[in-house]
Every structure is written in structure tokens, then in C-alpha cells.
Length: 249
Length: 230
Image 1: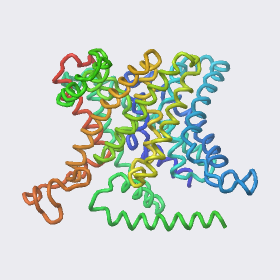
Image 2: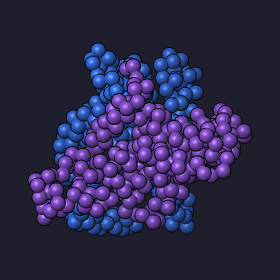
Image 3: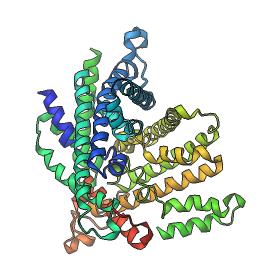
Image 4: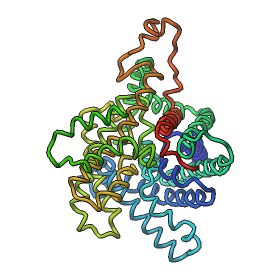
């Protein structure tokens, strides 16, 4: 159940492209044809499925506060989380390189279809974003991390295929000259994002609601919400404290 | 945007020959005709989600300005000793280090804001503008030129960010930098007295895309040369 919930949430509600704008650069640049979009989308799913669990392990056993405790009790106080950017991106860059070499060796056909896109992916925000969201959402175990990687990849895949299909069709319509190409793509993506917002009510578990409120308020922090915000924050602080005490115990 | 360019020229022109005409172009081009967001399609990833507030947009713009300016110089200084096969990793390490600095500074001096920006500060690392400028410019040019190029591109990026942030905050919550400029929506003063309402929709993420789309529309109708075929 937990898995299923995360799966649908990552694909539809927190869709990489429509909710968080991750991987927009390649999304806009490589969405002129459905074929290439499928290739890139598949590569993104693949790389996310590899790097998110890997970075989860790094985060749990190396970077988090108290993660080094397996080395001995005297290391319990170390907090290396300030290194997470550099570790994550290094993992991603090396994994992408490695995946490229392995795929080239064992499956030339797949390499030919993915090949050009793999190096591009190292600097795709969706990949690093996947790892960073995995870290900030505190995904509890390796299975869920793998799930999160795959499902957010699928979300991205769906998004790029949808826009590529629309862009192939829009060639036959008369868009105002100044909007052609990039401009109309932006607006289309915006409209699709509005459509995807309607998935928001899909999962209304209690835990779900709390987290969504926190994220939205962080973004919209405007004056009307401020008081509610503060209360929620206080609650969060208390929760966090409880969590940490629970961990220590 | 035209105003900003004019201003830049006035400020820079009287200085020494370091700012020759060619060098000045490095800064002014990305502000308009070669804008990283609207023309080169770079750096959209980490930009749009944080433009619901003007303040966050400005902070983001300056973070990128710092990272791109310094990063371009560093890469340019090392351009002759980086083996081309591993250059991507070297570039990523340089950016990641600079971004860690930005992140720690923000966490120390503006904790609330760094919470608002959340993972998007980290995502400066994979901001395509940065890698794009490293690849396209810093690897082939001298440090000073690379610095100007970095500043110019980051400013072009920042301008779009600030324009989007300005409209979204103004229309969405009736404030600018947290100050209520249109009157008080609850007490019904200012514009609200005439029945004006905030458009909460502007605060939602899809509107960022549509606002950028409109900016592109305006820009391309003013400069017909930029229009794409499809």
C-alpha cells in the first residue's frame, strides 16, 4: 500500500515536470519528435532507478547526521550532509558514465537508441532533483527509494511523450508567428500542468495531507496563510523533535 | 528590458579598455537577443518553481550570478589542464562546491528563505545555463572574458526570473517583496475597495510557465528575427 501510494503520487501528483519543473531543459529541447522523446524518457527512468537507491544508501550510511555510527560509537556525532550535493552529483556522473559503458558493451541496439541521450542525462535536473527530493522527503527504506526513482522517472517519461505528441500535431495549426516553437510549448506545458493539478485530490491520506500543506505553504507563504503557517511549523518542529528523540532511543 | 541594457552601457562605458565594445557585447547580448531562458532555452529547470515571490527570485538570481561568475573564471583558469574526457565531472565538482558555499551562506543568514527555496538551491548545480556556459565559453576563452560572459548570462537569467516573480507576486498576492502595494485585501483599502481580488492562481506553478510563454511572445513580436519556424 505504501508502495502503491508513493508510486501514484510520484507519477501524477508530484510529477517532475508539471509540479516541480525538473528536467525542463531537455524536456523542451528533445520533445520535437515522439521517437527521440521515448528514447530520452526511457533513459531517464533507467538512470533514476539506478541513482536514487544508490544515493539513498550514501545518504543513510555516509552523509546523514549520525549515519557514520556503523564505524563505531565515536563517529555518531558527525554530520556530513553539507557534502550531499557534491556526493550526489559525483555518483550521478559516474553512474551515467558506467551505465553508458555497460549498455554499449552488452546491448548495442539499446545503446544506439539511448546512446546520444545518456551523457546529456548527467546534467538533467530531474536526476539530481530525484535524489534531492528523496533526501528532503526522508524516504524511509531502500525499496521505497527504488520505487520513488522508477515512478518519478515514469512521470517524466509520460510528460515528455505527451508534449512531443502535441508538438508533432501543432505543426499543422496556425500558431501566431511570435509564439511558434518555444513560446507555445511553454504555454502548452502550463496548460498541461493545470490539468495535472486535478490529480491533487487523488490521495487524501492523513500523512499525505500534512506533507502537502507544508510544501505548499513553504512556496506560497503569503500574508493570509502566515498564522496558519506558523502553527503548522510549530507542529512540525515538535514532530521533528519527537522523531529525533525516537531515533535516539 | 531595453532600459536595463541602456543602463548597463552607461555604467560600463567610461571605464578602462577592459570594457571594449566586444567585451561589452558579452554582457549585453544575453540580456536581450541571446537571453539564456527565452532564446537559448537553458536553465528553466530550477528557475520557475521559486518565482511565486519576488524576494525568492532575486535571491535565486544573485545565487546564480555568483556561481556562474566565479565558476566561469575557475573553469577558464583550468581550461588548459582539464582532460577533455573527464571535463563534465570536473565542471560538476566546481559547480557543486560553489553551490555548497551559496547554500551554507543562505542557511546561515536567511534560514527562512533557504527553506522556501528548498532543493532548488541544490539544483543550481544542474542548471543548464551553468554547464552550457562552461562548455560553450569558459573552456575556450580567457578568465576576464569568461567572467563577463558569466555575469551577462546570469543577469539575463535573473532579469526573466525577476520579471516573472514581479508579476506573479503582484497579481497573485498583491504584494511586492512582502509589502502590500495594492492595499489591504481584508480591510478593503486601496484597489480592493473597488472590488479587485487577488488572483490566487498566479501563485500556482503552471502560471510560471504561462508567464514565461507570454514574455517570449512579447519579445519575439518586438524582434521578428527571433521567430522560429516550428
